[in-house]
Length: 429
Ligand SMILES: Nc1nc2c(ncn2[C@@H]2O[C@H](COP(=O)(O)OP(=O)(O)OP(=O)(O)O)[C@@H](O)[C@H]2O)c(=O)[nH]1
Ligand SMILES: [Mg+2]
Image (cartoon, rainbow, N blue to C red; front, side):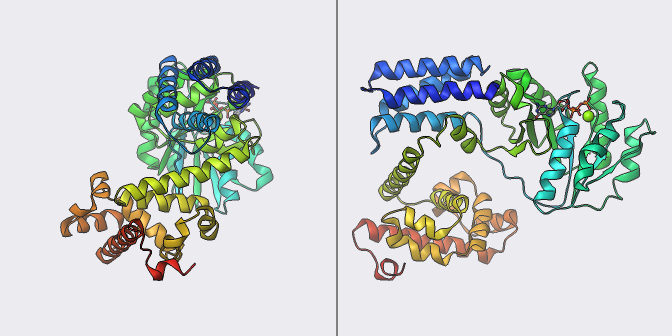
């Protein structure tokens, strides 16, 4: 219901832009004012809304693009909305213990079941350990939720001390992923935090996810900060987005703390749960499906602009990192090459030679570099290479190979700029 309202509001803003006859300052001001109203009624923080408005106005005034005016404004609006939701964090599929934390009624137990099912669908074995000894029948609740999926639940309905239950089971559970459901309390936060810390010490979870109820809106910010300060969290799950008029406020407030939102809960049922991807989320909210041709076109133009930008300055390792990330996001290499007119001419062989595994490995290495190194690769000397290799868990040879690859690309770019496309690149795609 709630998100529908936010979604309708945003769709109307986009509609106003697309149906306008003249895009001038007056229209942009009007559109930004509409947007402000929509966001504030979804409980997004007023300061954040004002900052967003200013950025949109400024970009609308300054930026040039090959897109026509309307498309350009929609693109700016879309990008700025995505930005206030933070970056998508990939949760690596691996063997892990995940502890769920959160206040009473925030949705921990439901989420524990949803997560266990999520990992099962991804092909990992999963189970849930119930450490909630406060709520009567918490263990029963889990058993019932997970029975249809044959997911095991560990717990002890007779034991009142969660520490003892944790000690009894934690080293015995053999599944790939163990989700640990804990008790929540409203009033006595201190005792909750103490119990969390104690459990943290015994369980040594790989991930600690805070479960937050979206209906509290922007108050989510203080809650996220408090939990992070007290017990440290590695990610956030926002629940009940289906039933909250303040969902926008909760999401943006959490994103503001810098903690990544990993999943969202959109209903009571076990399948009503999804990975959180700011891009997809906003596309869906503002109904980019309806104007998909625009988005396709915008994508192409973004790519063209990107190429032009890269042609103007010397390519850096940061560009390379972005490219690899984009390719991995899009999946098929061939599709990508098709999508970027002109690019294929000189990039295809280089990229086609890069196997997916190589790309992943390069990406890991690039992630171990500092921003300064990526922007100014010349400073990467042997001792930096050693550090990068160590930090990324790769060999020195692999780091050197990446640098060699980068230098080749840079050379190809230079030749391209001078209008001399080297034969070996140009004719093999
Ligand atoms: N609409 C909706 N309801 C949800 C969602 N997630 C949980 N709920 C409901 O919220 C209520 C509380 O959920 P629980 O999972 O029991 O919450 P909890 O954090 O384990 O609660 P305590 O164990 O008492 O701390 C239940 O009625 C759930 O069905 C969601 O994403 N959407
Ligand atoms: Mg519970």
